[in-house]
Image 1 (cartoon, one colour):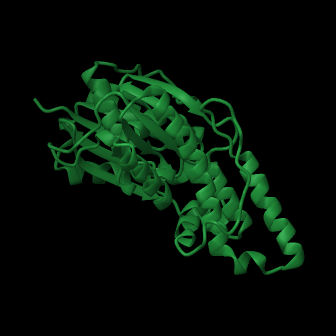
Image 2 (spheres, rainbow, N blue to C red):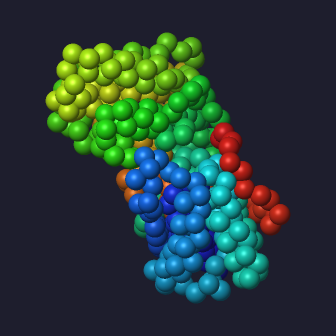
Length: 338
């Protein structure tokens, strides 16, 4: 009998539902929220209300696209955290209600685990997946971590940010430049037109495998502030070069620690995940590093880098195989590490 997992993701501002059948993705529906652009960031209350409006049609569409009936579902996987508590409550409550109605078990998924296991999303039965162990560079708006993955059930954080994450550095620096939210994709597009060696920004000197991006943000801010004193149009005239130099600096910081982790562990398979792994420069840098050092690199489709229910469903699928079900009384949580 087939194992069919319905995944539900509502940790931030995207409502998503996906169906996986025997480990193969059958559907993945995402409803994004444009309302936050006007505010320069996600407004939690608005996000929660949008989830309430979107979750029923999104889940219904995922089931329809998968070509299944609700009664075919073996279990429901949902993002329990971390994320915005109000948004998580919407997805968690819906998953619990549907599980009760269908009399199927619940699978609670750590959002970060979902990103790490996104490489196991197979769109066909013969899709290639990583071999264990592998190193995953998890980079998103709120997290920058190097994670050793020994199995779907055993992960170890080797290093992580001690302040801001890479995604925050992209978005906050973009905001100073007057770019729309979210700023990361705009920086990526501008960087393709600029000179990455034009400007130099400070890089941290943090021991071990931990990251820091607060100093970079300060250096970037001071560069713009001082230059604008002499030329009020400095940002507009140098946007592409600023973006290219900023992106290169962030990538250098990320790859410096990631390459150290590879040398320390001796692991030959690497991967990236999270929203910032959609960045063209990051993807190229990781692939180039893998090619130069004879490593196997797994770089996800851009569709699976942002918040999506496919990664929740695949993480839930592993938990189902391990009979790792959760009690219906478990509440969502806002913060946690892998």
